[in-house]
Image (cartoon, rainbow, N blue to C red; front, side, top):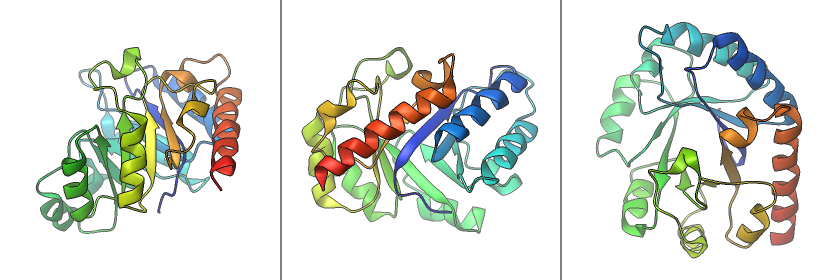
Length: 212
């Protein structure tokens, strides 16, 4: 599978599995395009089983599922890719060990040199964190919108923005060349994940149309 943009949902696997699957299923109905399983597990959780259930649910709709950091799990599961919090220095070695095509993405900040090196090593997308303050992105630096625009001028790979993204503040990022938005609480903590996802999807489409 490949990604080109859209609504990128990051999910917390530590919540009860039935609730997790219900929320993910509703988000899929709302139009989610990519799913990432965050590296936040309860002690003793059956990671393989949870990953299988998420993949089974997402793959019915041709939605790729990525894992945060733990790339070794691609060897044992049907995961479609891995998201690295920092650009890996050994991506080519990782590709050889996994021995099948997969999506590789990174979290990007304001350091253009680091992003440029990662692109040169074959990273498939960049997700900028954080565009706005948020409780789920408190470990990220605030990224300047002009940073996103400058990276867009450097590459054609998909660019996502994350951290405090809401349908109401997305318009301020129009003109940066973004392809998608990465969301956690805005969807997963909503009483209606389907409707929340659709709001992000519609606003993203409106912004991208303005950039044409």
